[in-house]
Length: 425
Image (cartoon, rainbow, N blue to C red; front, side, top):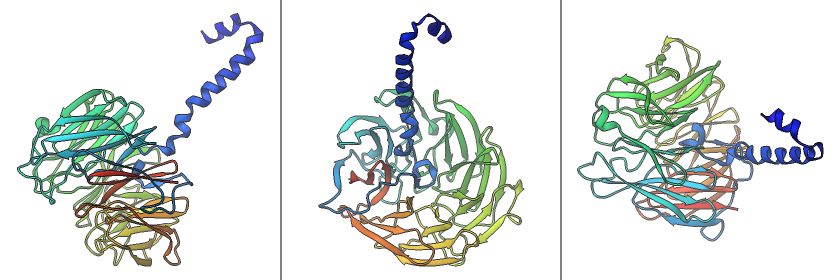
């Protein structure tokens, strides 16, 4: 068809057609070129890294806060960004009977649209000891995908039209446990991955993004944790990596079959796994349990693929970060501990102004640390000594904390339980 059109087209129009075609291609590859400005899910693409080199370094109450928007309800999820949309989820009501998804304008913080969903499962009472809107959504070209600890899994387009919805608790049983579900959705090509580990029958599930239908579902033994899986490719094979109370496992993306497992670990219940250089890094709240294992094994690799085990590292909420051949952990007391990637030996420690719920971020040779109390440190990724470039702060209400962030061109979007704050140059 295209060849026929060119054959019938007068030659004097061909240069104009070429120019228009080039303009069209440039305009449409903008989504690809602008991809680093999107923040599509938990920890961005799952690794807490950004290729942007123009992120803010200095900000304060009087400088660099572009906007702040109060949100409906209360939530602990991280915001996500696609194009000019910022998405945030939260819950409301004394029984968490209301679920909220809000779409904000990235430039102004104004609410573009909001959707309220009735929770299919409710709690007896909302307390600070259970998850409240904790799972982070996933965004993509077709829209936004949200999961709540009530078991509700839904898809909306970027205009807020509901595309499909499911209740996993009605399909597969109620979630059991005293602290709720905290695992976030994971975006993979054309699909969504979700880990449901709790005191009842647990499972790993893969869902089609277009239809919401189950591609595969792998049963798991009851195992309580709040970690989020990691998607990666190793030697051409796509894997889903799970670090969950007492085990680290690799599943094949195509069919959900377990490839390998490592069982010599304890209390890896909150921090999610990270990967670099053919290694998986898992963090634990127990001493001598944060470790690195080599990819490439089959079956039980507990005795064969341990690369190193850190002597003094412990980790709380924040997931480990890899940058400049270093691995960064943050413990419950708010101490940043830096280990060498090759052998796990410690380079240095640095006491932060507060603990961190949010995982640290690496960008352009800098490490960004967003403490719960609103104080943020910008540090140089150095193996020699801790080098603080800047210390910044935003106001946080008493009893609230910074739970997560998203990254875009020139901007950070910081999330507390009740508000979204945009930091920019």
